[in-house]
Structures are given as structure tokens and as C-alpha cells.
Image 1 (tube, rainbow over the protein chains, first blue to last red):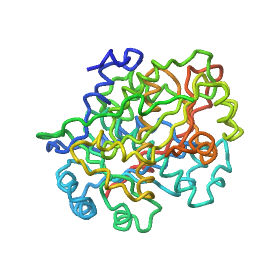
Image 2: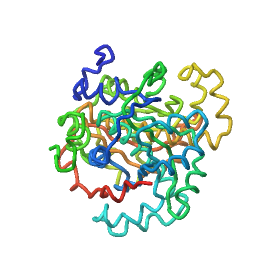
Image 3: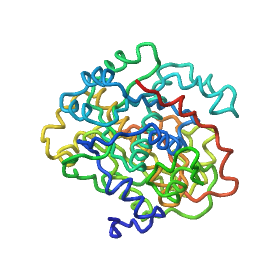
Image 4: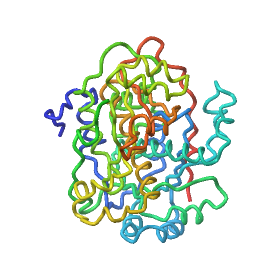
Length: 204
Length: 204
């Protein structure tokens, strides 16, 4: 599916990988019954963990919703149009930002022992956490595809209510919910148009 | 370099692509003189544009800093430790969120003609723009690597000052600056540790 006309011959990434991650992969709205194993989730994490974050802060937290009871508690906080998808997905993950990520800096940024002191201001720290967790959710969506699975990321939810429901005593801010599995019947809508290059890229 | 012990045999992505995007790829701190062409940037965009955003909103804007004069205007707003890297990189890009992304929804989300009306509230709209542009910066960093180039993303900068310097009359919010090129001499530090799986992934 690689399109030479768009200059993709300038890429080093092989066509099969480009298809797996970008061209053929789609956001799935229905899923088969095939389970998603913890081993698959581990393989995805062990791949994407290497992609960069600011000061190696790695604020993303992935909360797998494995129990039917927890799934019901989550579904009530989703937009009505998202509830059926999450009820039927083989695996559902809440992806959140740890706003106390700086506590890990002595472990993950050891060459600057006082790095954690840069993040005493909670509003700026939350913004850093949200931005870098956003990068990591991008990596995660591609990592799910790298495992041959489809991701169904959703932001149509009451994030504050999800935090209260599950993370009342934890420094986590829910950013999205991702349905994960093998596509089912009629899994996707027609692909929506992307912005043209000139609408996105400009030069100074 | 694929590590079977971490369960990466559960991935469908081939080892060469996993190395190119995640394992071998590193954040570069020095660059060679090899230029980065507009054709390469176009190939990167034409690849990553397919990765998903909420309601297909695509708020990321990429501003290539091509002129020496614009580069000097940018460098003054970077943290001192980041200035030399950006002075010497073959290509520098400002990556920003378009907080008026909703104006494009009739084009990019045509099956819901009133989608744009969901985003009349500017604070929530900016949060949506920042989150989705964050996802897209994650895709972009991997896309730069897919072109065989190294990315040097940086958030150590005065984003408000960059907005004022370049985007005073545009609805853009600078999120990061990315140095792009082929690695130069001593291009990277030792790799910093990643969080363990159990520090990141939990289950409900």
C-alpha cells in the first residue's frame, strides 16, 4: 500500500511495517472474541518504553481493566456512543498521567541527582505529565498495532469521574481509554480525510 | 537487537523496523552537516498523518525553521543547554497545537456536520488541541526515525515567548522544538533507565 507518489520512497521503514503501523491499521469499533494476553501487553510495553520523553520522565501509566466489575464501573463514565465498544472489547486500558512522575527521576535520570527539584510547582508539573503521557499514548497506539492488534482510543469520557472512581488516592489523571483486540465484524468506518501537507507544515 | 526474553516475539513488527523506530534510534545531541530535504519532511508527514486523533482533529502544526534569521530568533528562547544543539542541527522544527483546529472539522470529520459546535469552549478546546497534538508529536518522532533520521525533541524552552515571537497573530501554542538530522560525533549520552513493567502497568 505504500504510495510512491507521496514521496514515501524517501523512508527507510520497510513497506510491511509502514502498512502495519500506519496504512492498513485502523481504529477498530468492533472486536472479535480473541483474548489479549498479559504477555502481549508486556511485549508492547517492552517495545515502546524506549521512545523518548522529556528528561526521561515516562509519566504514562496503563491500567488494564481486567475484571467485569471494574469494566462496568468504567463504562458508566464513557460517552453513550462509546459504551458498547468498551463493553465488547477483549481488553480495555485506562491510560493516565502520573503527576508525581518526578518522584521517579532519581531512578530514571540518575546523572542529574536533583532533577526532581525542578518539579516542585504542581501546575507546571501536571502540564509536563500530560504532555509527555500524550507522547507515550501515541507510542502505545503504534505499539498495539506492532503486536498485530487494533487499538480503539477514545477521549469521549468524563475523565474527572474516572479519576474519582478508580484513582481517588493516587496521583493519576485519566487521559483516554483504549479498547484493544482483534477487529470484529464491520470494524471500521470509512477513513476520514487527512489534512494536506500545506495545511500542517509551513516554513519560517 | 530484538530481545526474546522480554516477550518481543509476541510482536508482528519485524525486528529491523523495531530497531529503526525504538531500539537503535536515539535522541541525538549532535548532528552531521547532511541536509534534511523538504521531500523527506513530506514523506514523514504522508506516513504519520494516518495515525489517529480524537474526532480526526489533527491539531499538530509543524513549522520548519529554515532561515538563519528565524533560527536565531528561536534559539534565544531555548534553555541555555539546548541552544548549541539547535544552532547546529540541519533542520529545526517548532511543533505546535492549533487551538482553532475545530474550524477544520467540516473538512476532516464530514459525516458529523456540526462537530465544530462541540468546541465552542476555549479552555476545553485548548486541552483537546494540546492532548492530540501530543499524540501526533509522538507519531512524528517515530516518523522522523522511519526516514532514517534522528530526532532531538526538546521541551526546555519558553513556549510563551516562542508563541509571541512567531505566532502573535495565529492560534498556535508551541509544545516542543525538534532538531532533525543525521547524528554527528558523540551524538548521544548513555541510555537512561526505563521504568519496569510493574511500575507502569497495573490491573483492575
